[in-house]
Figure 1 (cartoon, rainbow, N blue to C red):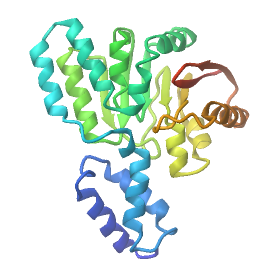
Figure 2: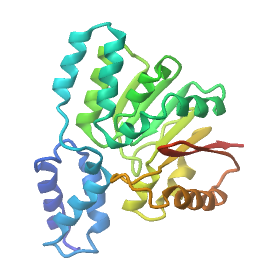
Figure 3: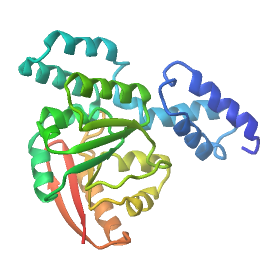
Length: 269
């Protein structure tokens, strides 16, 4: 599409439409410009929304009432058993963290055992995953910053951290394609690479090379959102193992297989 003014009008309309007001306008714009030359103007709004659903909306079954959930924390106060129960319920709202409940804290214990002496974590496309770290009691060991393109989700996480008195955890608005990539010991990209490849094929290598972290933890789904296996473990293992030699830095790589997730812990050597 050569008409930039028309494209910006389409972006503005989507950004203000129901269901998209909390989504980063920067992300909507980036996706729109990637698709602009592939579709005529009349089809473009639908295709942009379809792509945004693939990379963001599909992970929620409905629109969570975060305000109602936050009210529960005031009711349960310091009851640790109830707090863990509520955190479990919240994790189940997001398909990715919901699947992860079956393998935590074992997954984190194995990852952090490899990433020795690490004290800080940066997570991209964090969703609600910070709460699975809290549920596994790893909030007591690390300084954590999680980035996501959903402002409502980011605000919710920060309010949960505040309610629980967790000052070393923070969520921020960010898009891994365009944001500054801060230095920390560990970068978490949990089930993120398939999502960014859906947006721009081949971009994973560029992003991995830019990450300034000593450890990069990458994971992949074992099942589709529809709970079908589709040989996903074999596919992602082959895909990622072929990507590793193309990185600009030397690596040590440990592969971890769990019932619901395939994990690679990549260390820079």
